[in-house]
Image 1 (cartoon, rainbow, N blue to C red):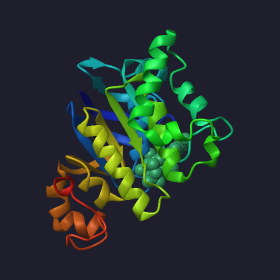
Image 2 (cartoon, rainbow, N blue to C red; image 1 turned 30 degrees about the horizontal axis):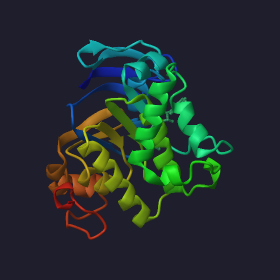
Image 3 (cartoon, rainbow, N blue to C red; image 1 turned 120 degrees about the vertical axis):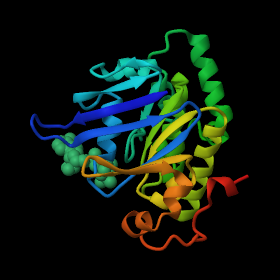
Image 4 (cartoon, rainbow, N blue to C red; image 1 turned 90 degrees about the vertical axis):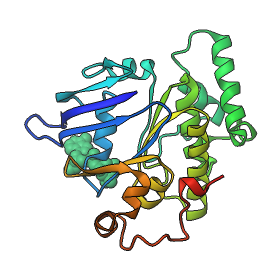
Length: 250
Ligand SMILES: Nc1ncnc2c1ncn2[C@@H]1O[C@H](COP(=O)(O)OP(=O)(O)OP(=O)(O)O)[C@@H](O)[C@H]1O
Ligand SMILES: [Mg+2]
């Protein structure tokens, strides 16, 4: 579905942050991108969604090159991007935030249909529809951001550090929700600083360091690799109780 081929990109001319990144996401997959702070993980997602200019290589989505397209064109083709940090409009209601996600939908019936689907997916948002988004908890705001991104029914959703700042229990629930979305057919590319949990929830993973891909493979292989454990997973490969592997989740 998505393929990056030797992508070079950066913010300042002559200063490359991504130095030839290649990765792929198959239809139906959930892929996790991990790596230390400043490795360029968010820049990868921004390069895909057109927020950062690509100076080399290519990005293909469903077989077509999308490199150099504008962010709104890439969004319209079906790639949603939930950015790092908080991005709800805090003084607007949950309902209004969702409508913002569908602002480009002209047909009212289509918009109502999308809204009904999002409310069905996330009953919590329906319950809190009239509430100011800023009053939701961190985990609930993340769900709202995902719901807003799904208003255009994208086949691919990119999530940048969805678990950032969440308590462990909330984080586990959020990963369960993300996995359910994936099981229902949504293809997901997720960046996670909680590398263990992120990989455990995913099919495959990529490790980025200094704008280059260091390792990639099946998520369980990365989790079992002693080198990965030492460098990126904070120690031993022992199966900690704080995360559940994809295969263990019903
Ligand atoms: N808007 C910007 N202008 C200039 N440089 C930037 C900008 N955003 C990020 N950078 C630089 O690009 C590099 C990669 O940043 P990026 O945010 O992609 O890393 P990351 O892997 O997502 O890190 P984190 O784990 O902290 O989110 C860093 O050196 C950062 O300082
Ligand atoms: Mg980042």
